[in-house]
Image 1 (spheres, rainbow, N blue to C red):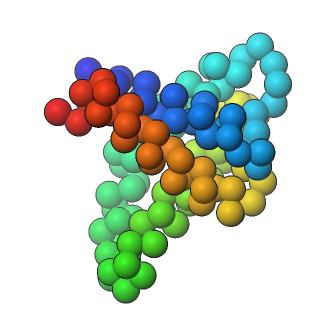
Image 2 (image 1 turned 45 degrees about the vertical axis):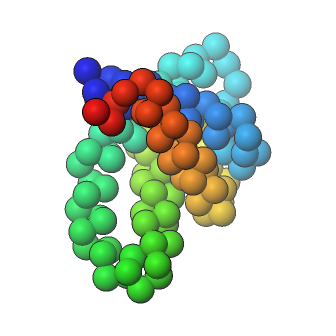
Length: 123
């Protein structure tokens, strides 16, 4: 149940991110909600599988950079989620540059943390 609540939080966070950042776009169409749902599912799976490994391997760099590298890992995972979504599911979720991915990762982290606190997914 917590995984579904986390996907819901990431779904809302990605929608907010697409709305706020002009560099992160969805191709207009009738399946935008489905596309964001697929991206949210991909991000949730990447956060459960690859992210802990990258965090462990990047611990020395994260300590040296005072935590900024953690945000870079999130931005890279957002890029990876967009690439998987576009190549496998043809979602139409595009990120124009790394700065937009970096800010998008910050927005997604903040909004999904708030949503997880509201829904109780952190319990």
